Length: 605
Image 1 (tube, rainbow, N blue to C red):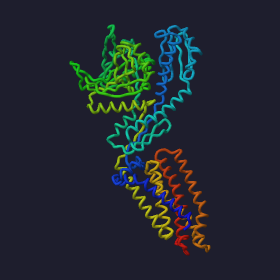
Image 2: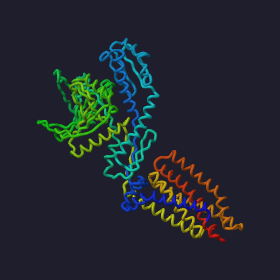
Image 3: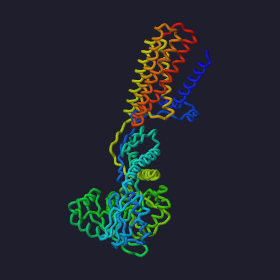
Image 4: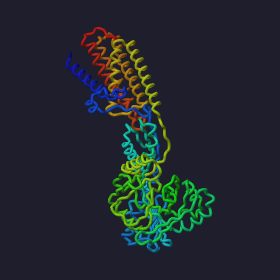
């Protein structure tokens, strides 16, 4: 035997053995024989092919990112910077200079003295020029309106979607879901979680969709708007809103005994309070620099014990958040030994700790609302300046202890992976049960088996002994293809299976081109050895061109496709490479053995 032929056979044999080894973990999982593999083997070879959403069931969700909300959060942070700059450069504090947010991208500075408007000049805006520009000045009202630059808004919207994908991916990683698919499509985020059990759907949706937007806002207690205007309107219109009640709240400062009082609305249904404020005439609407917050509280009996009744209450808040969850450095949870309710403990970074200490010092005696995802968790009274950069969220309610612990752990997991830069709005979802997945797998297996058997029989009948070579090459082609997918830890979907079937068809097509060329050479009277050499040599570029054309199509599908389309493209590209290898080089080695090593005078083809 020629030494080069021996080297080729040894190389192909080594590739075949390596492919079977790489494919073994996947095959063991498919056939339920994981225990059959030795422990050292499973530790060494861990990569395997996973089944996609359409094969093993799971959850497919589409969310839209509320990018405008991200702009509003940026405006809150910039308002804090403007306020700090006024205190540092102008030596002004409220009420001589009040900073408030207007709309989603506006910041208003209102001076007590109208002439101070001129002090918002080029020098003052030097450090803010990158993010803000002066939109208007009014010396009569003493107001200056700053707007976020348009390019910054575009950048924030892009960042909100991009960071949303990364945050969701981090959260999904904590769920230990195999081969999740999380991709961006415009301002939408598509999430596919294969293998997820139906009983876990709701918890997973809540964990992924939880914005975890944590905000700290000061309650504007005792304001004329609530104590005079809303109090009077609510008492007059109370009968128009069934279940709406007007309540008074009062407390005193711990150190000096200064009294505080406030008015709030309450109802069992939050929509009742929201409808009341939405129906107000334009002149009585909530001012632009304020907003209404809502908290769900447990009712108490005369002994002060919580009852089964729950109600929503309103808070009149300053619109601008004094502190947000972006400054959280760490979070953990424990159980309060007195109430037996879980608590989530927050630790702020250095910047966040400084802001928290400054805000708490400036608002001693007032309430600070802790808002999580647009719902007030609690609104404790700031009894003193709070240093150390620590805060606490108490999880109450009448849920079971196990449910509250799970809620606390989920909240900690979400806070640790970071808040979503903008809220997610649910658009659609598809739940695929495992029964549908099993049916799809069974039908796919049946179609592959029937198709492969028919192809094998056709090649054996039509090309006889040469058909055996084609069938062996086709089977090796499938083995090599699946081994590559296992090494890539690819996810096999129904389109992926279609790619495997297409690869089988391409393998047969390549063999037919080569075999028909060999037949033509034999009809011209050439010897079997010469006919094989000429057939493979002259058919090579035809086969190669066809494969390159399909390869380009696969690359385009992978580049611009999403989800299952990409799965099909990966299978197609890997199949093309394996098909070219088996149809041209592996088949040629077997033909060389038939016609060259046995000195054949005839060729069965």
